[in-house]
Amino acid sequence: MATVDDLQVWATGLDALFGRVAARFGRVEPRRQARAYMTGLLAPVERKNGWQLAEAVGDAAPGRMQRLLNSARWDAREVRDDLRAYVVENLGHRDAVLIVDETGFLKKGTKSAGVQRQYSGTAGRTENCQLGVFLAYASPLGRALIDAELYLPKSWVEDQVRCRKAGVPDGVEFATKPVLARQMLARALEAGLPVSWATADEAYGMDSKFRRFLEQRRVNYVVAVPESQIVAMGWGGDTRADTLVAAAPPEAWKRLSCGDGAKGPRLYDWALATVHFETGPGYQRWLLARRSLAPNGKGELEIAYYLCHAPVGTTMEELIRIAGARWAIEECFQAAKNETGLDHYQVRRFDGWHRHITLAMLAHAYLAVTAAHAPKAQAVWSASHQQRSVVSWHT
Image (cartoon, rainbow, N blue to C red; front, side):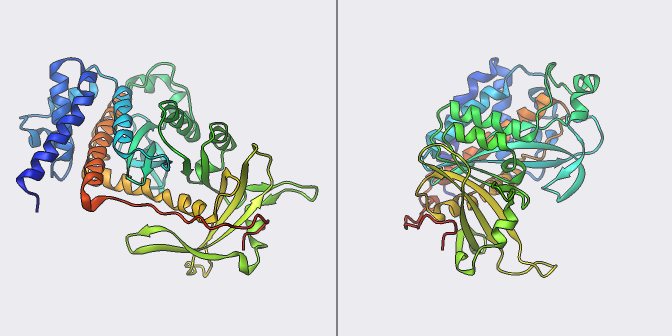
């Protein structure tokens, strides 16, 4: 049970956080309303929409909340700069991982910026929704969302009238999700974040420009790729990931955990192969395969594939740890949606979406930092430093 002292510490921490971003809101009214908005996002209310946020902070109507998102003068990107600095100051660590992923927001109608029928991994099917591409920072001290971009499909970008009605700035061009991811990664790296690794699912991992971007910036990566990914080239033709893994000898597979889940260690069978693509001095590429322990509904053992790029001598256990780190962003999504209303917004405009998402991420970061500083919430990441032989298959 929380004590009076606990509540005072939490209130003081929230005041300190908002003090970092207060100047971004210029005038007194939007500054006060932004502080009230964050308070509402952290309040125990069922749905954190305009009406309920207003009621939570004592407003008679949602007008002030709506003005904050739709017409007040402030730049959400500047607040995200402060959010990133806050996370790094409190959770920063040289062994941190940058994680890219997207999440869907189910919507009705056709007027919300970027909405259309498109596949949502959140729903597991094609739905009428918006998609946001997010960047998370995960370190041994904690994890939090630090950046986000709303994905605008081509059908939107090519319809300038529709874009103007939804508040999309003139000159915004179509950008794929990997391009949006590279933009966010560039902002993070240019800000000097302490980080050693990046990871992402196959929508990003299969993009060669995305991988090259990380290599050029000396960020190690473990990224998922499809089974059809070409991983070796030779006189006999190109070799796909699934073909290479199918030839792995039984002794190549090792049963290891990629981290703890809700039900304990996440155990899989893993195999690692060196792949001989040209890369920079001192670096190596690998194909990492993850095989399920139990068959799926079709009676098959599911296999996932990862391309890895890191310094020569990096252990298999370290690569597996980074592959498992991608779950951290899913945990961030779940916590931000459940606790700070990430998906509870009722805005249609492009800037309104970014404003709500930014304030929800800021509130979530506050919870993450508060938990990290609590004695019982300290997290400890461990990695094996066992040596492995450098052969085609690591047995």
